[in-house]
Length: 267
Image 1: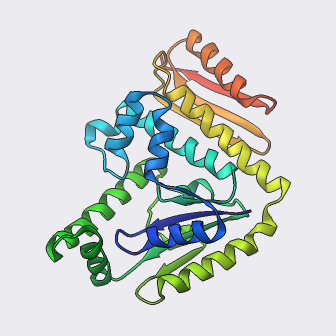
Image 2: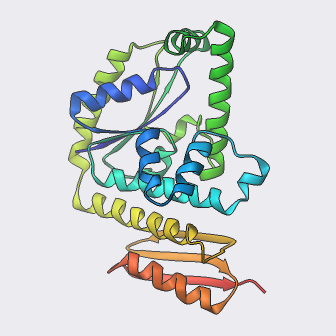
Image 3: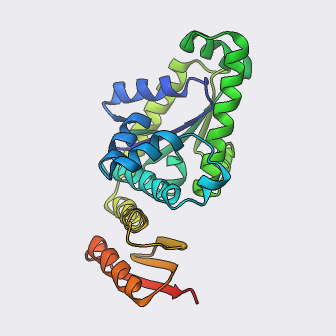
């Protein structure tokens, strides 16, 4: 059992590759609609933010909005929760960054020459050539912007992927077969130690999300991350009362995993 993440240029055929691999290997296919459904369970407001912000470059005001940070944390938490189930194809949304160094995860990027992308978009969306060109550039620009805000990374940096495929060079079927065979090879790296690494990463993301979506808290700065087999919670808060509430919430989610709380007061 392995995990596949796919980052793709709009119109490159990445979606079709993901769907084909999921069907052949009987993997769960995790896309925008599935993740928005997950976010819906956290409240109607988060569903609306998900619809408005997913693959959308936030405005200046949205970037610093409490809800945007909550949406980003929820999104990352749900992606990692799906990854815990193994046998999943995760489409976009920075899954490759979240699953970096997980031995049984394969992180690929799919690109294509702009002319081929335009042709595919015209056929799929039933639009003219100019509109297809505009859609390709607009969608890629907004995806890139959102990924940079959520992860501080460049989505088109090929060093962030295990494999990069150009559908102008290889056919979709050829790429699907290569990915399928590589995933089957990756399964041998699905060890107890590797699963534990992913589990503690997922718990850290869940703690961060649950704190950031809490209406009773306002935290200017917060991060939760693994350090060895422990968790570190670091941030800036306003009062001792907030400190206890945050620490209690985090430790409840962490369970048996040791958690060190490093919260500082803003004077």
